Length: 245
Image 1 (cartoon, one colour):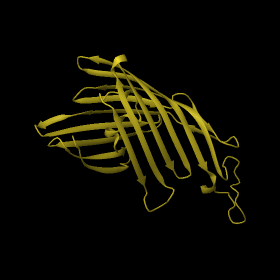
Image 2 (image 1 turned 90 degrees about the horizontal axis):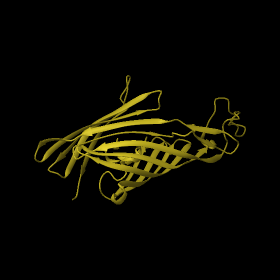
Image 3 (image 1 turned 45 degrees about the horizontal axis):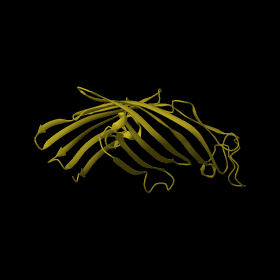
Image 4 (image 1 turned 135 degrees about the vertical axis):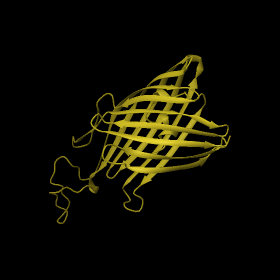
């Protein structure tokens, strides 16, 4: 939901585009009170411009828990940036790794036996915690000026396949991200930025739509529709916050 405030999370070409040393941190919990091992995510990112070589550098760390599966992504980002009359363009690459852990003790198979012991009766499922690591590469392009931004990025460009103990494997699908937004000045102290974030695994497409308002330079609010496709809207989110200059 906070893609507009964490643009470097999925696009390595964002690094340095804010013309400042920038640190972002995020935590989310989903299905709170329903399951202790449901879904939660932590993100930490840092990036800065290196003007002497027209570049930007960044670091992105994401820890994502979804049920029995935990995935930790670490990416070092480099972005070459070039100035134009209309704004700036960055072309970036992220190089790192994915470290995954699958807790087989939390899984239950349809043909498993869990009354007279613990047996999934499935050679593809581990019965305890297994871990593995694989290299990961991402690529992106990012355009921006003081009024608008647009970007396109893809991750897991090289085959990202984690091999666990016992030779079971987990294949991470490639993902495509397309985003953009424009800041409309309504009055001297009021502006609106509609934005869009399109996500695809090259099989299905989901779209996030948001509109954010800045009031008196310091107060932020807005609303978004997350995970829209032809059949559903995954969630509606309301933003509220403030900025200290």
